[in-house]
Length: 225
Picture 1 (cartoon, rainbow, N blue to C red):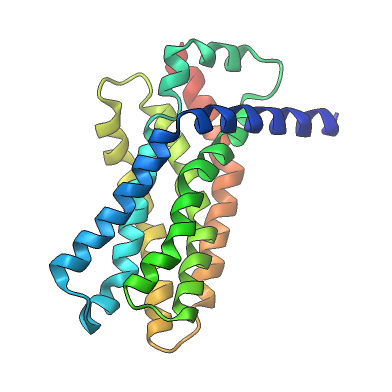
Picture 2 (cartoon, rainbow, N blue to C red; picture 1 turned 90 degrees about the horizontal axis):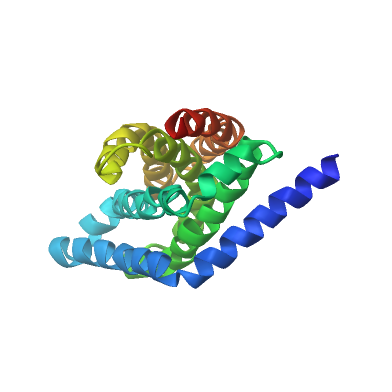
């Protein structure tokens, strides 16, 4: 039984990754927006010591805003194609399928941003250790952004102009993650090790991974009734 569930997870993940690779424009545009967003801050503020102090907050805000792009279309496309009804009627647990789709969204939208972050960190004059902590905090904290975002996508699915409501719903929920991510780099810049922030980010991501698919599954069933 466990083997079948794992196979279903990987089959759903593989299928979603194929779809996203065909629609490269979405995550390419997100990556370009991420680079431009941070570059504009650098141009406006100047690449000086003051900018270095602000760089943790700038990178995390840019990452947070950019991650909303992939989440906004999480269920919308499949609803238009009639795939959501098939997911709900599937003999497999809906929360497990949503979990697989969430991982696919994270790989397609967040992972490219994380891989680009070290280069932007160099542009923002971060040291090697600071760049390492930047990547680590994004790796540990970004799954929470995706899984919390899935709940928002399910709740706003039936609403007109859902993108606006999704942003209003998610941004307050993202604030603790943003504070911890920014605080980790700020703590390192103050010559202290940010172990507390990293552990707490990991705990939030694990909690989101555990609970969010179930909440999104319930919200999706209500939205499709």
